[in-house]
Picture 1: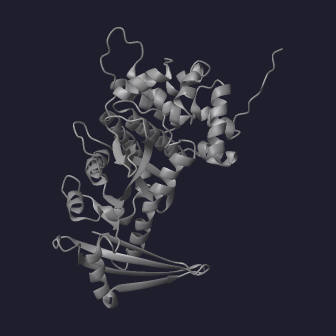
Picture 2 (picture 1 turned 45 degrees about the vertical axis):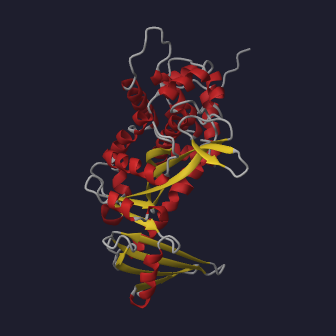
Picture 3 (picture 1 turned 30 degrees about the vertical axis):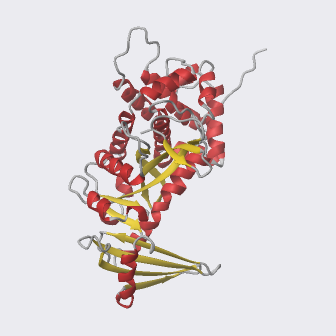
Length: 427
């Protein structure tokens, strides 16, 4: 799964989705989608900048990204706007299959061979003026309106590994034919079946915050067609009934203490507590981690529920899995927003699907980069030499602009100093 193989595979999949075009159509949807993807792959600052460079980058765009046309930024936006978002969501599945076939997902299996897949939402577009039919609307007290798009992401993580692998992205936006704002709990019920489609034979633990620790969603996860386990954060204000039971059982709860030079951890757990007063039939296993920083004196307390029976052999892993939920924020969203992808930048909003489609293309570019970081030794050495990811992507972009090459792997090799460039001045 070297990067250039993934690029060719993606272009082939875009080609397979190409609809029948009228005879006077000059530009293909497939080419426009690949332009959108390449924009995020080379980390350009805007679509306008990317399309202005199409002619000067013509060789590398063709040899690396298989882009054979040079549309304007307006044309790219128009075509990508028309592509149904569902067709792009389906593209996570083949790359999840590749990760599985390469044995990478085996390395990410954690508690009882489950994959940890936390789910979280983030805002990636907001404007007082620009909007589309799918925008969510927030009315302010001063009479102004903010139009916005949020997305709900699912990412494969591991407490043992830095790299994360996006497995799904669901726009939290008005659905076709509706006038009401979408919500996270509605979006997650669209996202979860797509996770199962992408990983049909894998055991899965869904992670999430206290919003998901409710009866209807837990029942939804445990349906045969999903068949997923969960580890959810809980808060006393939201799940008070659980905390009342835990308080009554405090003296009987299993308790373990772990000490190091820097921290003391106290872990308590109890199995088979009732979720809440209206869902007596749903039993949840409760675990608390109290962490004391011996240098600062600060105390952090974490609380989770899970449907995995907790015992003396797995309680530590369950707390690590619960805390791994933050990887979706730290390793995914923060990287997308601050390390070259510019997740919150408005690359184009459109009238139909453009905003959501650009978010998906960006997430696919991020997935490909994470795969390289995990398996590509040359990529890792090149990134190490560059020093930071921002510096690395800048070097990639500079070489992409200045040197005609046959592959992105060649660019990585130049940065890693496996290939030396010889500059010849012609007077």
